[in-house]
Length: 258
Length: 284
Image (cartoon, rainbow over all chains, first blue to last red):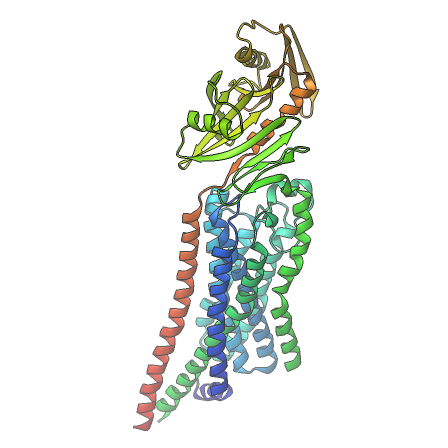
């Protein structure tokens, strides 16, 4: 990295002010409380699903974690577009943070789905279109981090990452929409109407929301917390980490110049 | 540009609301499946189909449906064996205890059942994880729903006749064969109707490896009406024990989140150490 670029990076990254830190800590505490309330609603308050038993409660983490990953990956798109237009480093930091946090949330989504599938579908994994697209989505974003770290030139790296992050979002959209495009998926439709074709009803399945009390409130609250508080608070912490990294890089260059 | 980014972020934040908004759309789907036609015992983890036209007199602890002097009831008896549970459900239903005319095990799609046939009632019991579940059909001698196992019955129609005669002998042991036999198309399959000397009638239908028979002194309408018990029996569903998978899922999800947080903390500490060292070098 050239000294000029390092200086430029350090100067363009805003230092966290005291107000921002207090707000972040407040939001972090709020997030922990929100997650705990969501777990209470899902694991204790909601009734046991009569068809699936206790494992259905993973639904209260599985669905919200995808909502959180969706928001985090969306932040990468926003950051990528904004960086390509403004060339300000803070947008690149947002894009990177979105990928890291989104990847962790997507992994939670995938693993909880796999564990749920074992007793319900009698398999840990199958190549159902929804599961396959979800796996491709995760691998695409994992490749983002690997490819990004392999480019030495800072400007090239950020430009490449911005374009890649924008294009990679297509895998998120495909994962979200695939159960409405492909007729051969057995993944239940949770958000939106179930396909009305009689043959589809037999294969896709549905959660009998009316049969189990407390499902709607647990899903709604959990999704709100996991898609608003969890990704944004984690992304914010990750951006602050990136700010510190830029500051240290700038200091290292300065010391080396001396 | 800032306004555009702000607007995009605001729209993203509104995304989760779509989950709540669209749940309203799924409700009619659920109603279309008529899921309310089931009796759910959420605490004990089982449910049964409520026969159409039958009065639902269930409580939180047991299911009871009545119609025209007939009763179907489902209860659980922790720790009791099959004969004891069968005797107990008779008493709990207000009937007098009696020695069963027949007792046999049945392998049905929803588990292994023990069937007890009494003079005016039939009981099926099943044991699952220490709890015995018992289902009773009680009425009069006009119609008794009985199941007889016959391997290969779907391929060999003669086995239906054979099973029906065996069921009729449970009530009148002297029966040697059917006086009349007729096969009538009904629904997706056929129903066999037998009449026997002495005024006994039976209707039978093959399903899986069994013959489902209603036998008694009533007419075919009475027998058909009693056959709804088979639907209740086959629809009986026990909630599986999937708790270990819940704990596994929660554990793995927590581990992923911990790894993420730990990674952030360790990298943060490492950078702060580097910053402190560089500052010392800078000042030196």
